[in-house]
Image: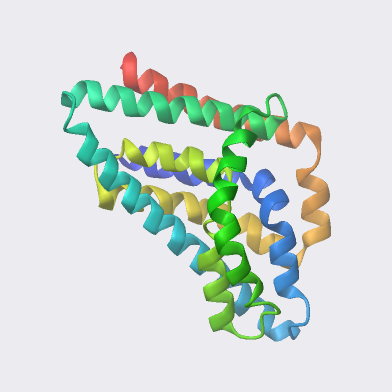
Length: 221
């Protein structure tokens, strides 16, 4: 897997922050409540470490599955098919971020079936008082139904294996980190900024552009 793919995954995570602010902002805000000011940053880091660890694990699983099933097709055709799926999902995610299409919201609702079984465990960890609780909560919340994460996971299927898939999701997770850390310490200001239509449309267009790039990589390069 090229460095370009890892950089692209990081940038997609960074641009997807307008979606992260909406999906996880309330959770991150809840983490900050009732915690002494000197303890907020370690708790937020622990939460995000757990969340990114779950992304990385999911990426390893999807990368391994993609490598296994790619053996059913020729190498070139398998790469094309998997990259095509990833590109289409990223385009849909970009449209979703920009508010141009809600098609990906159906995928998020489908993931809610699993989330309903996990979410009660997270409620048992609230209110968060320790770094260990925040880490455990982050690992659970890493499975929150999210179209952005699902789009990236589809990409990992074409990555070439478990290690590559884990690396891709790790890069993506690190890209989401700045926005969610800022959400913990400046929630109101960041929330107002990410709700601006121009910001959402620009971020969505750029994410969709990455999807187009994957389609180009699959069929024309």
